[in-house]
Length: 107
Image (cartoon, rainbow, N blue to C red; front, side):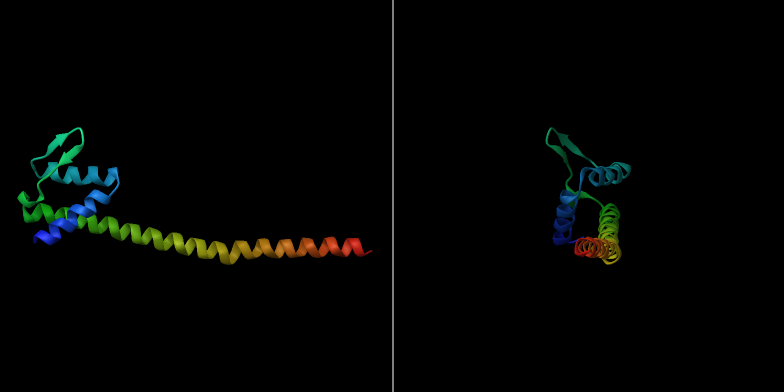
């Protein structure tokens, strides 16, 4: 894997939440990779990893990105449906109540 790709992979992993970082550590430990740990965290020299391990990490990162995109899309669609069907309904009810109140006061 090229240095630029390794650097991008490193940045992607650093930006992930703790849960996903732990999953990547599981991938590394499963493959018997050397990990350096201190109070600040766990450090891994990615340039020393085999291509297979790097590819496995990249596949996991790509999978997480794909899942996040799907979730974002579904959340957007949910909000669109909510706005189209439920907010308009609320506005209709407000219009009806306003109409009823004005009709009662004119009698």
